Length: 459
Image (cartoon, rainbow, N blue to C red; front, top):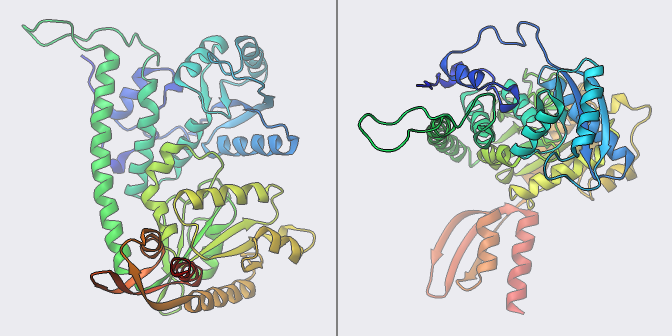
């Protein structure tokens, strides 16, 4: 009978995925922690990276390839070869077609690769078919991102969030991971019918583990929400931006912290909050997980409670790497994430970071266009004078960009009540026969929308 057990959260190492090719490795991970890790021993896989997509713009395709290469490096592996393949029509069986896959595998072996990495989301059956055709392990974009996240998870909460996403990724990939997964493992003594297959047994164990982790995460989320409620009277500034844009370096400069700010994707996963004012006070600044294009939905779901910080902010500071040629694409991905977590109404301030890497300072017109008219600053987080001026500007903004007003909202005005409870803080409320008398405080952009909605109703 196959045994399956789990270690405590604090002992988690990297969860082996289906692309490792052996069920024994998956089971072994749960049975005992591997020490030292592959990375600690200096071991890494030689990867051949293929950027697959329908994008026609060569500049965008090149940027996508550079990003997946940096992610592969981020999970501790080497890139020995790379190519771009523009997909005209996806093949249901192998995504790129068997003939093309064989040619890619031949080029990979010629470059000394031991693994094929596709910058695409592969269906479990596509991954298995590609491994059969290529005769080598195949890893998709989601598996790479999951491994990078797991490598950088530090706190118990982050490790749980990433492991949930890992197990949800692994669940449909149980079949075909190296053993005869349809082999029956035996039934109950003196009972009728066959026992569970190995795949059914492992699936059940994974489901049990998922339920356990989700229950623990709910408790940790409740605790975090309680902590945020205790800080509800404070103004909150939240840094958000594409991964590796320099958010953590800026956080260190603004709040005099010493957080790890190495130039690697997703170096920061856990939200870190500090007082922005020198001796404590009413303004808190937080650094959040970085943004990336096509963030796997299961990771977005796992980090939903963490990203909820964005919607509760008084001000979003969107950090942009001004030296990155793809800054406009990165800004688009950041805005899409802000919209997904319901933070569209939060006031914004743009910081164009790393200008020390530019031959000349960015043009004001370009910064105004990219910031869509919102206030902005262009600086290097290494410039102490510039960051001190930025801190003063942010403090002035969050302390002056809110209005307090008293309004009456009829019960039938559901759209107005939605604006109030979605973007304002209710300081007092009185229920009457016709509606709600409310005293609220909210950013001016929100109070302006509420006033406009009330005027339209009255017209």
